[in-house]
Length: 579
Image (cartoon, rainbow, N blue to C red):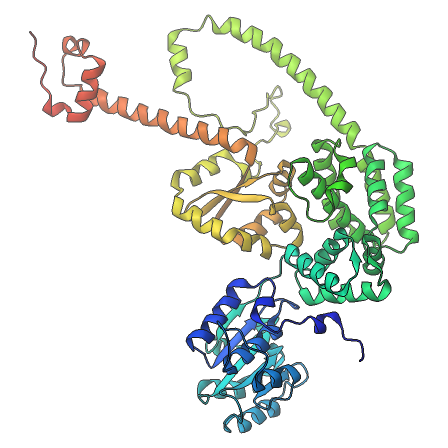
């Protein structure tokens, strides 16, 4: 028997083997069980996510007289006919190569004949968005008044190109990218059946490169098996796909973390000798650092094994965050230059010097701390001389947010030399945050939380990397505040108006703001305290107005308990009687 590709050999024949689409699959099974079969369906989603496979299983299920809980039996005449491609009542059409009016007219001429052996005559049109305008118009007439025994299943990777008049007559099902963990599980199951040894990190690499498509993952695995049937290793998949080997990645990161520019450049030269893509190398580094940060924070890494990451456990988070920022910036810049090797060498020098920059900042921070301590002693001494009136002013002073602009001291009267402080991005502006908090509701927050995973998935690559570890913490009807687990990612978006506009467009809100997750609890506490102070101020003012009718002698006798009574009953209902 001739060799059969893995994606064909292990193509699911039942709903239960379709990976990564549980809700969609359950809906289709329920339709079979209840007999609620529509005349037309649209399966849309990225390539390799199971659209055509699901269409075949669904076609078998609705024509199978022996289905069990919506699953086809795969033994009856109709199931076997669809599996073998011999059933005349099941027609598959590739619209990429049959996209003219004549092909659709041919369907219209044949559809008037009832099915020969099945209950339904099923037409599956793959890549339906490739049909011409005339073909769509011809199809529309068929969809408007189809025979009771006809079922159309249209599959596409680009639903935006399908006319609205067609979509309005279909039941639409969206296929999502398959999660990497589901792909890894499926690949490992297949390799166990094939009795082939494998490195788990190799399967994780395949899952990442497949970009959520099971068919792409199986195609890469097929190539790897062809190259080496004995064992699927990380380096084997790296050589096959052009990604960087673990050894080179690890050696490079260790070298730059130790400020060893010479050794790091040597690793770059080795990557060039092996013909690797430098853009892919930077992306692999970003993933490695991401996994190290997850490992250091006791979270399961997604690409590399914990045993691989142990040698990086002593790298400081400050250095890793700085390195991640440099790599993300250089990844964007690399696409705009011709001499990519020079850019990567300069990037290497930047990474190697990060430790020195962090050390200088620590030294400066210590100097500033010492100065603050000296100032504090002076302020304490001066503070003892303050009057009760001054203290009361401090208590009623407006809330000072965590992050605010510091007004510089202007010692020069020349207006041209004044320092501007009003051009700070509104993305983290406390005044703007407070506006959202003032109108925030639990209902708006729940709606945003339910949308958040999809928002991250729809984001462009750079923005998706920056907001992957975020979550909404407050929302109103026209604004949202999101918390960033990584401070550097917050700073990156704060300094880039294009990224902010892209985020606003994704969220479809007029106001989008960010805050560092570690600062949120203190910020929220201070905000609530401020609200409480303002409320007390308002009540005191109302009490003052309420008691204005009383004489000074009567007011002097009002106790704290009586104040509460006056507030509760109203001054018009209280009369003070002198004993």
